[in-house]
Length: 98
Image 1 (cartoon, helix red, strand yellow):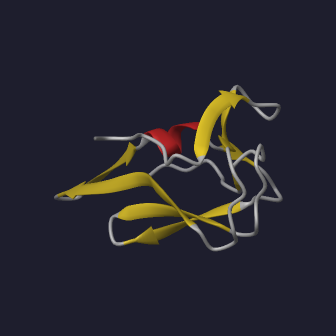
Image 2 (tube, rainbow, N blue to C red):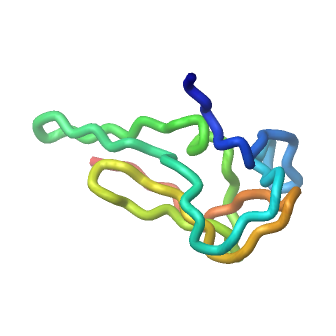
Image 3 (tube, rainbow, N blue to C red):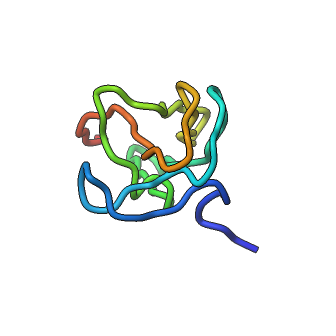
């Protein structure tokens, strides 16, 4: 059965912006959270497909997670131990793929 988020995450209102993703249990540093984006390449064009996980995390200058590109996928990992009810955050900038 398809699950858009791991069991230890939920979506709810964020104090940062709109909706956010929150941990429902304590998670250790360096835990793989899941795939946020998939890069599709056809000829000279690239397209990013956002997963549900990639659609709801918010920005922080002091993030608790990081995106790592592995082949054509962007994978989210925890940068530090996180506690139940912490909001999942990533440091990101706006970008456009050409």
